[in-house]
Amino acid sequence: MSYAAITGWGKCMPPAILSNADLATFLDTTDDWIVSRTGMRERRISHVPATDMAAVASARALACAGLAAGDLQLIVYGSCSYDEQVPNSASGVQVILGAHNAGAMDVNTACTSFLYGLSSATALIRTGVVKNALVIGVELISPYMDWDNRNVSVLFGDGAAAVVLQASDEKLGVLAEHLGCYADARQTLRVRGMGCAYANRGVRYGDTRWDFDGQEIFKKAVKGMCQASDIALQKAGLTPTDIDLLVPHQANLRIIESVAKYAKIPMEKAVLTVERYGNMSAATVPVALVEALEEGRVKPGATLLTPGFGGGLTLCSHVIRWGSRVTPLGASSVDLPPLTTTALELVNGYRAERARRSESEAGLQAPVFAEAAARPPASAA
Ligand code: UT7
Image (tube, rainbow, N blue to C red; front, side, top):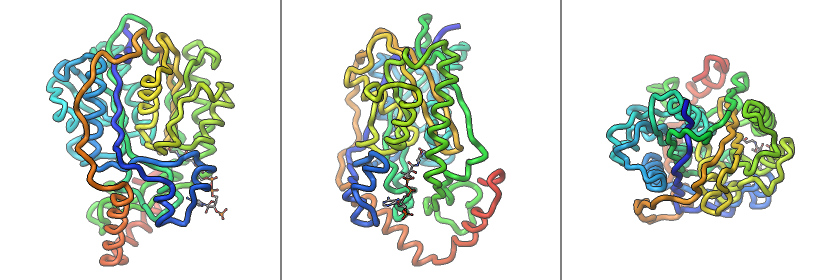
């Protein structure tokens, strides 16, 4: 059985920066609170659709691998942000890339979507179904963020990255992983207002209410990422001392520090983007991986550990072995269209639209939101 080596990588970070000071212009919050509780100083707000960010990251990953789009056999779009429910988003990226010979699927496990997608694509390569795959981690949260809820709106940002996997006889790529889910606690992280439960029931799309039990999620995130890493390392026959680089999900600097401490992996080995990008959900791990490569932190033959956690509450950790090449074979000239507005203007546009609707449609959504909140978690949308 062959392995699935990572041979290409690329990211696409939208240029508009939303700082903690920007957030404090409309929220009862401070730079000090956000930095001390989360480690975040700024995040990015996209001025383009999610598939456009994903396509730029993907074109860069394909160029890096030296793989023509027409030779691609599978596209996995890992995300909980879809431009549309149907058709799927992977097919949208496929059209932009011109990857006419690829299969295309979306994977949604919230913040772990890229990592679950990596497992899916790796398994399909290892079993010979496809010879290569593009795995994308992308998130466009800003349009459906409840911006006036400080419990969540300071935490998240937009971004995208992608990797190319290719069949290899060498023992490379994902060596072992553990996938899990604390489903009993799924209601602790929930975006109400999007999904069939709300369709044609008086809720305007994107007019969301976020349920977010931060402390509970925090505890479960640390536990889940630690347990998943233990199991993945055990399956790979390795110990934490074998890990050269920790590339964790970036939901909170304190979570990363706790996971590193538990695993006895020094923080110098951790790749951190949380300060500059916040929590980009599915995009955090691949963006951190791409930046580690750009900074020369991934050495030939390196062993990486990538613990992740997200809505569901899904959890996972992957042990990844890098190949001999740590530099791109080529570069792509594609880029996002120029920015014509600031991040704060984009956010204030979303806020104004929500305010306008809630004034003109006061009370319209209340019954269906109350009903959804009361519904037992097991049958919730
Ligand atoms: O990627 C998906 C996984 N997500 C996560 O893993 C996130 C996990 N949770 C967390 O990272 C943390 O729980 C948070 C960063 C969300 C919150 O930090 P915390 O230390 O757990 O704070 P807290 O929720 O206990 O709130 C402490 C205080 C409260 O005030 P009182 O009740 O002590 O007066 C909050 O109302 O901080 C207040 N607060 C804020 N103050 C200023 C909550 N949000 C803010 C804010 N600015 N943005």
